Length: 115
Ligand SMILES: [Zn+2]
Image 1 (cartoon, rainbow, N blue to C red):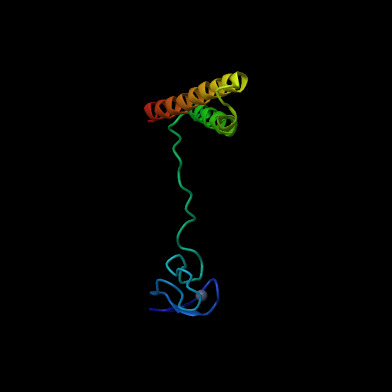
Image 2: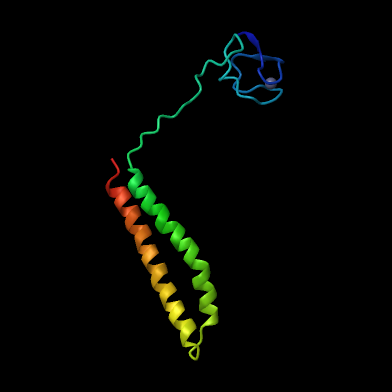
């Protein structure tokens, strides 16, 4: 057991301590020389899902996100006497449905092509 200097507060800490008792910084990441003994973790990201399907997911998601407020707004406007609003509402309903389907199909395809 040796005393080392905490990298954060520079006070003496046991090298067996899990955390610095003064500032709480993890000691396990600090070597006896006061330098980091754990290499900076750079997670290796293995890109298995092709960008193609990720793009489709994004397109479906964004279009649904854009259409949804219009659809909700139109839903409150249209009535049985307002055929134009109802037609527009129907168009937006179909558009929302299509983008939702597009979004979920893209998710399924991304999953299918994963790995
Ligand atoms: Zn400290």
